[in-house]
Each structure stands twice: as structure tokens, then as C-alpha cells.
Amino acid sequence: MFFTLSGVSFTLSSLKYWDLYTELSPKFLRRVRRFAFFVLLGYVMHLPVKSFHDFRYMDLAAWQGWLQVDVLQCIGVTLIFLQLLMWVAGSPERFAKLAAGAGAFVVLLAPVSWALHWTKFLPLTAASYLTSQTGSLFPLFPWSGYVLFAARWDT
Image 1 (cartoon, rainbow, N blue to C red):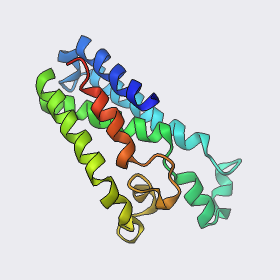
Image 2 (image 1 turned 30 degrees about the vertical axis):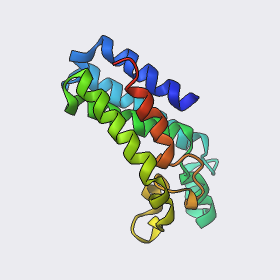
Image 3 (image 1 turned 135 degrees about the vertical axis):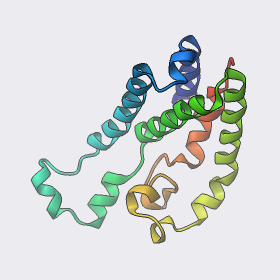
């Protein structure tokens, strides 16, 4: 439900300032920074050490636990994607179609994404966003699909 409400609230707040959010304005950049803060906050909440000096003592399991993708990271990255999609789309109608298409893409490719061993090709940080094999509870595939489908609501 939290994912769906994030998508709906994104669209409702976006329609109000559509023109300001579809150009590289200070309002656009401030909004992207706010979504990036969600991602950062998700990592800070899982910080496995008491000080930055202790990072050098972390083993692979500690790194994997810290870099797992949780709700805040998934929603934050998806909202940044939606903001960029608005910029590309240009109109609310086109945005709705692109968001629905992106949602279908994410949901349909989730089994493929989960079957691949992403850590062979990508660093753990990136691979954690694509599969639960790294310990991620809410990887982008399929969870961002809820936000993407809900973002096309009421357009």
C-alpha cells in the first residue's frame, strides 16, 4: 500500500506544478534532491558501524547487509525515475502511458532479473537494486512496479 500511495501522491503533486517540474528549474532540482534524500536515509538507517572509522573492519556480510535495498531506497529511486520520465514525457497523457509501460516492463521482467546473478556483472551496490539474491528486501524488480502503475492514476 505504501508503494501505491507514493505513486499516487507523486502524480497528484506533479499535476499541480506540471510546467515547473518538466523543465530544469530550481523546483525540479529541489524535488530530485528530496527523493535522493529518501535513498540516503534508507542507507543511514541500516548503518552497520558506530563511526566512519569502523568501515574498514566490515566484512562482506556487513557490507551486504548495509547495501541491501529497502523500502526507502526503492521508492526514492523510483520517484527520481518518475521525475525524469515527466521531463521526457512533456504532457500528463504521455507521462501516464510511459509510466504504465515502465510498470509493465518492471513487473514482466522481474523473474528474469531475479534469475540472473547480477553480482557477477555489477558491483554489490547496483546488483542490490535488481534482485533479492543480495539480501535486498525491496529490489526495484518487481516492487517499483507498484509506484509506476499508481503514478499514472488520475492523469
